[in-house]
Length: 127
Image (cartoon, rainbow, N blue to C red):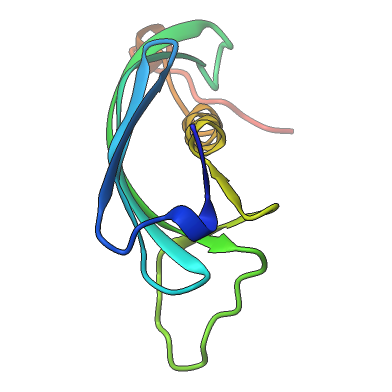
């Protein structure tokens, strides 16, 4: 789902997309001429790799995400103490499928330990 930045409403508008068995839904709204806010939830199941043995495992997702979308380069104000993640978009278009893929890659890049490795008492030693 793509939307032109200029068409993002000031009042909240809902979105709901999915990829495989992962659902990305929430509300987005424009908070300035170049900034929009996205409040979303990611739910479902996805396959990730164990960081110790490399085996694949299925995990359940139930995560809330809150971030800003900037139309072009984001320039933070000196007075602003914004702690939200800022996603910069090109071509004046917000691509929610791309946002979902980014969130899924963020989950995949985290350290996940399978049940087999979790119950094993050995420690990894780096030389």
